[in-house]
Length: 460
Image (cartoon, rainbow, N blue to C red):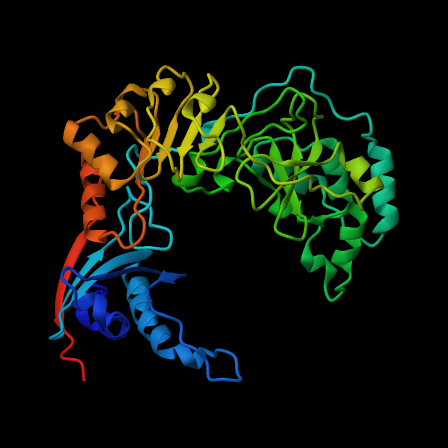
């Protein structure tokens, strides 16, 4: 039986929390909240100061680590990824612990016990993750493609390499479901890039890197960088837009069935061959998927031949950012009116920290592509105007604004996901109750709550 809901599992942590928050817990309605996952946790315990003259040691926080580990072991035993909690502790030591287990319809929160995005439609993903590559009539390999030159150059640089057989290449194509371009076949005929082939020669990998300009993966590891290769959180992904300009070499996509990953830059960024180029790109060009970005890729070289001829070239050309008119951020330091953001191409709008009068949403009514609205506290003059935005798929509001929509029965039915923007020490129990109220409108699984009673005894 799992001990995750046993008071004894939580008791050491609760004792630490009582000591750290004695005054706030003693106040009427006082509570402390946090969340714990198998790989990380967010628990409001102040970091101890080390002794003068030395650094903070693990032993200085051993009590906290041990208490957290006790809960994490229970998570593992219960095969649960994470759990959030709120606890009330009376001065007498009586404690009421509220445990919020995961729901398949709610993401965990970021840095607090509040739930993250609520998935109202099972399997729904943000619009950029639904985007497929567009056909580019007339796309051709770059003029620099030269299979003979490529093979000759590679064999000169890595003469000791063991190449893949034709059968191995055919097997890789069958596994991927796509025919490999001629340059990639030449590459793997020269070296199949298996670590086992290099044995104790620690410099072999470096010689291959120097030869091609990146860390080449083995033929066995070649994969497709489709949409599933880039995970997302709805709150962030809904504010993205995938827009390919007419002069783009690479299509602005999350992933593509034509992005064939063949290696890595050495810094976690995937190197791929692009079979679905942008309007000004070339079939078979080499691109890099920045690990810090969720959408798009950078052009590395117009062909593998060109890259091998100049393996020192740099791929990085700056961080991508969705801009007007597709994504707009209205706040006191950016755009200062909704009218300035309202454009037929607008897809996502964020109303942030604002020091003026609340906004009317009237300028947004009828915009054909608006799918995301995120609103900071006090930015809406009338939350019920949201009902006029009939194409929304994601909505993020404060508890107060959600309350207006819920009480009026005006939550947009077009939504695929939603989020409650709750900051600070808002009572997790109230936020979870509201989240479950929203989930119930779509008959989605609620966030389960278990109440556990216990007694820590009086403080010494």
